[in-house]
Length: 232
Image (cartoon, rainbow, N blue to C red):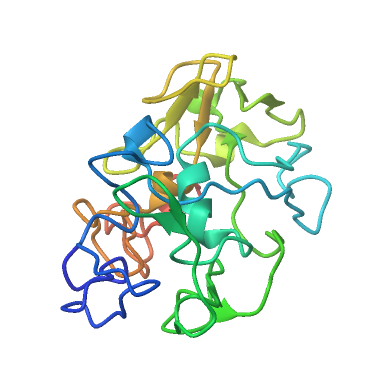
């Protein structure tokens, strides 16, 4: 993560948030008294409802989620949903440290795509996901049907236009139906999240934007990210 867009330390040339000296991990995680026990998450979770601009996907009737769920994308949307300010985090004593208007990051709303340094822009986007790839939706593993995040794969989806089972480092997830999401593809309950294509810790990233594949290319073999899942 050192030197990436997720490095908020002074060494990473980001400003301390709310006057709080921070380490490489502590914007998102803390070893004690985190806001959420899961992953010792230290960032305020989003409660925003989402709009996509269309009622369904363009691939055949798969409904898009209108709210955050319990998958890993919920963590990403702590910063990237357009409503939670970067740095709405807690200190080690567990009390929420709201960001302030004098801090340049305090009023920065990070949007998926575009904006300052390619990661965000000022202004309240209010949960609009229009123009972004769907997340929290089922994937047609091995050409089969799937239910994920309470959503069924649309009946008009051309399943032959998807890679049967994307290879690592692409990540697929499974949903047990009660909201518990785990890493790994399981027939009938497989879906995608932000971290399907992005590695927030940059360990398996092979290109910019924390991508698990290449941002440019023309084939699955050369690592082009889109073709890791889509057959075109």
